[in-house]
Amino acid sequence: MRFTTFATLVVGLVPVLAELGQSRSGRCGSHPSEAQVKLSEASFRAKKKSSKALGGTPNVVIPVHWHAVQSGDSLLQGHIPESQVADSIKVLNEDYALTGFSFKLESGRYYTNSTWFNRAGPDRGEVEGIYQTEMKQTLRRGNNATTLNIFSVGFTNIVTTGLLGYATFPTDYTTDPQDDGVVIRYSTVPGGSNAPVNLGKTLTHEVGHWMGLYHTFSESCTGEGDLVDDTPAQLNQTQGCPTVAPDSCPGQPGRDPIHNFMDYSDDICLTEFTPGQILRMQEMFMTFRVGTA
Image (cartoon, rainbow, N blue to C red; front, top):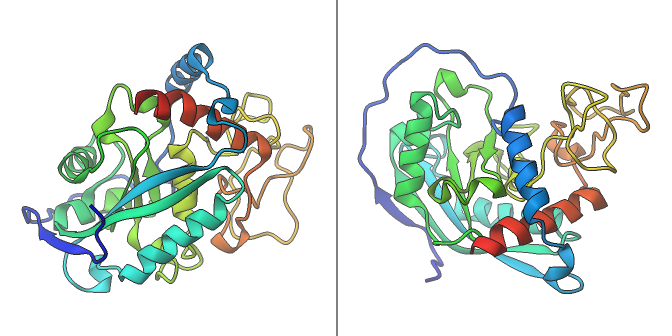
């Protein structure tokens, strides 16, 4: 069913408890461990399907369900206008125009739950992870791996301060389908208040993870990095939008890919995926999403 307007649903209001915690470093919570990456990549190598299975130039339309989780009815409480949701999908389609994937908003709803809005987070070993699992299992729509569920929340709890978003990876779906999807800070949408990260590129970045991409930067200049051959080695995440790209791995070819959607540059600086990243997304999608849909 297509929702032309957002419906509002109040879901179990729970008081938010003040709790001290460690502030997260980094704005993206999609950081699988080395062991998780090795396991995922072994599965990918064993099951990999060629992007040719998409049939020539791919044209895959991904249905999207947007869950706007809010603590109240004001913008500061996460009640983003429908126009900003529409603009988010527009930016997503512009950024993925060369990948063979496009996105169609099938439904959008507001849900009032202050606990989910303030405290949902990616760490499944913490209470924030319990809240995000509860949120996803309650709200998720579409019983397949090819449907994209987007949850916009506040990340206002001290534990999630600075966090802009996180996502699951294609390889996660088989073992934990109800956890699948992308979570973003509501103020990062186009026209949001989170300048200079308010042009919608956080969603582009997190959907990149959902499609199987890792960050372009890593902890070493000589390791496997993001497992894509045509992204230069990068030791440090980019801050701001440098006039000249740094070279954090001077012993390796190329300078830091500051315009790549999978870096941490300001939104205005992010403009591209590489051909290698596009191929990886197509093969990941065919292997773990179409194959399990």
